Image (tube, rainbow over all chains, first blue to last red; front, side, top):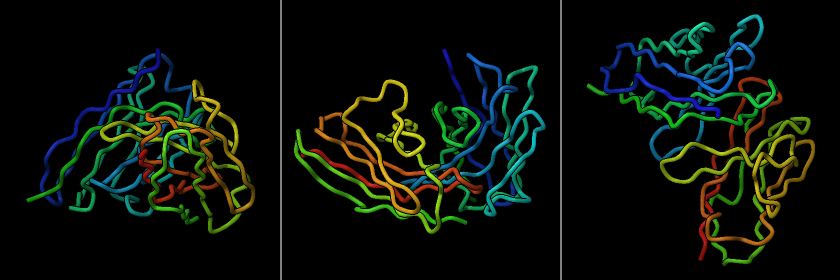
Length: 119
Length: 107
């Protein structure tokens, strides 16, 4: 059974850092493109980043480029999002998601973890 | 970036009704178009991909169509459990982008 479980969210001050994790079971993350997508309170979905196979090539949205870093640990089946220089507008629920067949649509999602950036 | 515009922003319809939600892309997305359903407090669920292919376990009352820049999601006979927000997403080119969502209320 496929399961994605995010962790690491919480309250952080502007300018601070946070690292989100996504623990995966039911498949190997080395076999699929993985992504982070967020949703600000009461707002729509925003794609942030993906990490591809087999070369770990990464893509980022302009809103997070240079501040966020996606990575994965194949041995531990973990996906990460390192978030630096956080801003109030980064406040959102952050989802990790698995690509359906490496095309860019998302078949499996985690339950999300809330990140609040506030002083 | 490709902009995705959904309409209507919200709609209300009765059980058994047929409803259609439209999504317009700012450029051709070559049928790389998915639809998601999201209920409050939950993660999105993939309904359709590649414009018209049903996701796993999705009821056949959901259907999709379109090409080029214009796409639509139709629910042929609304059920109470279809009350949700629906999002389109283009995955033709990164950054992948979502529509702003359509909130569907069941009367």
